[in-house]
Amino acid sequence: MSVDYRIIAPSEATAVFDDPSNHHPTTILCDLSELLAWIAARGAAVHPRNTCYSVVTNAAGDGAEMCVDSEGDDAITQITFYVYGDGFDYPLIGDCAARFGGIVFDRQTSEVLTPDAYLRRCRGSGR
Image (spheres, helix red, strand yellow):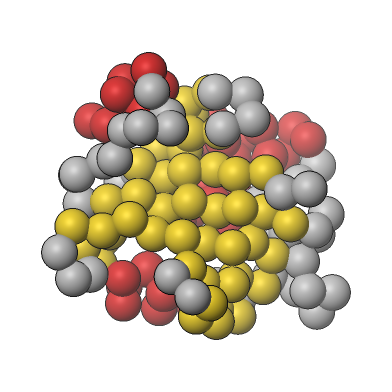
């Protein structure tokens, strides 16, 4: 089973909350090379996989499928993490949102969280 989290710009929150399946953000968070470099600097392995990327955060192979939506060539407007494995580095999602000025939309609970609120929830759940 995988769970998914979307990182979007704060200005997109209401529209995504109202219609998460059909809203396609247009506010730019970062460019693709900046995102991939930041994740690699965290020690995660990043591998291209079709139109997404595999992000592996530990030796056991726990990680996420990371898909990005873009405007133009590399201007990222949404980052979605489909998490698999119990050992995934969940704080990576909150730190990524903070780094690129985004917020986290939790598809499982339909919550829109600031990076700090998301990270507090991670610490509270032991993730």
